[in-house]
Each structure stands twice: as C-alpha cells, then as structure tokens.
Image 1: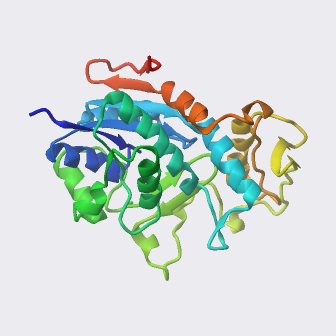
Image 2 (image 1 turned 180 degrees about the vertical axis):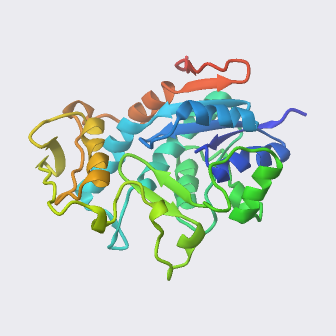
Length: 297
C-alpha cells in the first residue's frame, strides 16, 4: 500500500525537523515546504536538511512581497495590536504560509498538510482555520500536539536519530523571525520571573550598550502606509531591511515601517499567493539542484 502524501510547513528548526522523521514513522510520505518571509536563514541548507532528515522533496518559495502587501500593511493601517500591547509580526505570516502550502499540496496530490505548532498557542488556530477555509477536504496533521514529547525529549530524539537541529539542551530557544519582527520562546523564557538573558536578542541591544546620541529616522506616510525612508522612496522589501541595521547598531527615535508599491494595489489574494507559490523551487534526492515549479496547466 503506497504511503499517504503530506506537505509539511518546514522551518528547519527542532520541531519540524523531528516531525519529518516522526511523520515518516507514521507512514507518511513527507514533502517539506519552506516560505522565505525575510528571516536570515540559509535556504539551501534548510532544503538539504529536510532531504537528509527524510523528506522525499523540499520546496522553497519567496513570500516576502505578498507578506508585506497583504498582511503587514493592512495590520499597520488598522493599528492591529494583540491584547492592546503586543505588536503583530510572526503571527501575520501564518495564513500566507498555509495558503501557499495548500497550493503545493494540491499540485503534489497530497492528502494532508502539517505544521509544527504546539497545542498551547494561537498559531495552530491560524494554520488550521486557514487550511479549513481554503481546502476543507484536506487533513491537518499537527505532530507536536500528538507525540507527547517536550522540547528536551525532542532534542534527545533528534540526537538518537542523527537529526541535525540548531537547538541544544544548553540553548533550547525556539526563534521565529520575518521581515517585520522576531519572537523567541522556550528555555528560561518560559519562567515569567526570569529576566531574558542577553543571548536571546539579535535585533535589539541593551540601552546601556548604545551610544548616548540617538539616530533619527524619518518615515513619510501616505494613506496610512510608509512610502519613503529618509526622503527616499524605495520598494517595500528594501524599505524594511535597513531597520535591522538601526536596531542592532543604534537606538532610533522612531522605528520605520515599509511601503507597498502602487502597482500591487488591487491585486487579488489568489493571484498574488499563487504567483509566489508557482515561483517556488523544488528539490529531491535525485535532483539536488533546486528547480523552478512549472505552472499548472
């Protein structure tokens, strides 16, 4: 009996790397799918890790432009803040990842999609609901909700099965990053009384280590969206990127946002998302070089 096929939202981290092996043991043919939302990762290395861990194929897709245009800008215009104090960043990418993953799953003839979310947060809801809305016929598999392992157990499992993962017992953090924000959890951060150690930070710096004189950043807005940085109009992605340099080197008075091009306005959701997924690259054990997906006929 042939294996059932499944597309896994693959980050290259501990949870989803362990999930590939675990899902294979459950009888699934696993296809890894990674979306680039602007995090600083070696996508070639992530694709290779997925194949080495046991995925039959691994996709990488560029989702940066639709992420900014369809999710970040509307949330910025709406002033969307979770529970009146938490700026939305990584959460905004989940529906987009789910939509692109569904498209790849249909192209591959998969029976299900999977994600690495735990059972205690809202990300699982974002993936589950988005998939149910776009592909109600597809099963959603969430290994972390089923396998009964905590993070230390996962690290032990990865070591036992020779799975290369970035987390260790000494540095167990789970990090999620995109163009708009970065979040860190696990380890000592689970204790609300513990002060976060310095090694969890990457975009910011201790104010005591910053220069006395602030750096001023001028952002020009039009219709609720930033359209220029320091008097210069540029693309959305290029406008966001420089903010990281200021976050790590200086202490800006005002934090810049990003802009959407006028050409992108009016595009339909499906057109933008499908365009991104169609430009994804696919890699298998027999074709280690990434090749572009062909459009549907």
